Image (cartoon, rainbow, N blue to C red; front, side, top):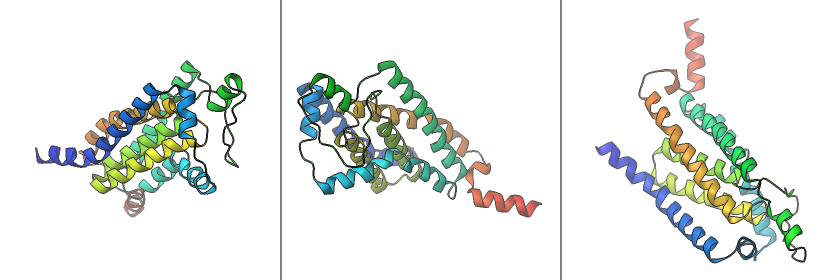
Length: 225
């Protein structure tokens, strides 16, 4: 019973701010059409913000896999949990992209509003199609929730949520996605992290090599030989 309350206590630092993010973005999506909202969210660009969002967007790209590699030095099972979750998340997200086949901002505006020039960020290659949902956003929300579930720490939960939201917003700022793309991406990522956490938690309750770090497993294997 106490453990359940503990889980509820730290998870609310992730899910309460996420609920505010979800509700706020949903209200904006209902209040504006997608092109109006995109231009509203892109109304303020500076060189400093360009650099910041170019960097932070990688939390939805290569950084999750770097984190998975680092987790090998903590617990093999934790690393596999994140890697398998990322793999299944990519499968679901890319399948949805192909099903919906939505245009991304560059193509959407060039075909429907050719007089509008989107603010470009130097060094960012803009893609044209398969924008719904956002893969970077689903990946970062999955990764940050996985880290929250692994660390069971309130401060970490809140920091992870902030990083996920900023990464999601970077996709709009960089003109790679619309707001609805990142909203669905967040839902997909969170859903996959929660679903895969169930078998992970069950596995970790049983004594096995999955509870040890990879260096410790290798050391044990060498000593036994």
